[in-house]
Length: 165
Image (cartoon, rainbow, N blue to C red; front, side):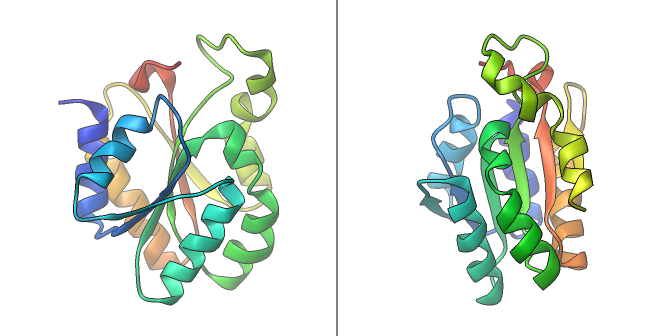
């Protein structure tokens, strides 16, 4: 089974019913699974827009996920630090990590390689998804952690799991 199938199983187990996303070839198959499922999907123009969509979803009684890549996640820091974190507006993020192993685009390195440290600096808890992990369980636990604590939780999907770009 592909990692995306396992991630979708984890989202379902955590009762996620909304996925905000941007186009990306690595996480695209996960988005396709969400589109083909019972989940509502919202294509956004920018990642910080997804934070707003997911915040509104939470206030409306829904559970959401953000699916994007690390360079896009970097654009959400103002929304995370001034909206999600202080106001207790949770979501789970499944983010394609760029900038590390196998990266060909130097522009991806600053945010992608250091994303876990950057998230920690603004108080956003995070973890990784690696080859050999029980992806379904980790996604479900991260989502449950986000919704139980009312704080975002971001999982960085490593290229060893996703195959990278």
